[in-house]
Length: 379
Image (cartoon, rainbow, N blue to C red; front, top):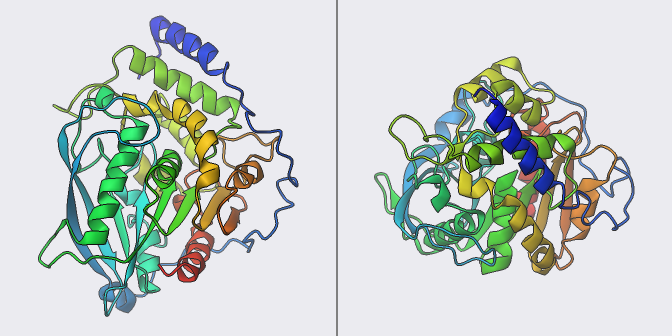
């Protein structure tokens, strides 16, 4: 997308607005420095290795669809179109009996369900690894992405997306969804994990509806953003203010890319990634609903008033070299202190890792650490 003088002026105006929000809104909470965490998962980097063919053959992958209504019943005030849509995804099960617990995984900006089930390069299939180790997962294309329904961009927002997740969770608990070829299983325990803006969505779902058993937040905080983050959101917001783009040929309007170019996207997302992984992610990059983009910072303010009430175990995952957050501030530690009512916050720190944590070379560390967390929480 060419940055015209008109777009540059709009971006400058948006930046001025964004910078009125304190980047360190909760930086007054003092913790140890970045490398002084309580119990980080730190191991030397290992080259990702693919699962054995025999292990892959035992995993069951079942297409699923959920019927939802795009209405906002969360605590974050924002507008939705109120229309019915279908959410498409995959239920990934281990060999043998279906577990009693399942985890719903939620992608962030620019990605889709494949963020969790990345098979273009061996060694990065997060949910495949978890299925090999006995865990059930559901991955979805969020509303506006991939094979799921696509409202006009202004008809979606952070509160609405969280409300859709709530509907999906209730369907998983009651077996009220469609599975290709078999009856839909119901699950007595449901975990919820989100990456980036998906991390914000799962927070909103957790404190608004209180219907999950464990929560995972990956590379998202409710403040302490880097200058690059503000710059990227400003250009994104300016594009939306000018009407955005169509979500693919013949798709609805009001969408925008996170990062004006692929180079901008890569600068935000990756730190130490295989070039083949980056190329594949770039080829499948998605536009994002403008209503979501324009309600992210509003939702962060609401989060600060509510995430302290989340009372389930939380895994907080973060890459040490995430470009969206400032090196000079202990942003991850500060966020963790805000989860005041959680019975246990598990810190999973990934050295030499950027924002797109499932796609960085540290992916095996993430897979192993999350496997332990899922085991500990009956998922």
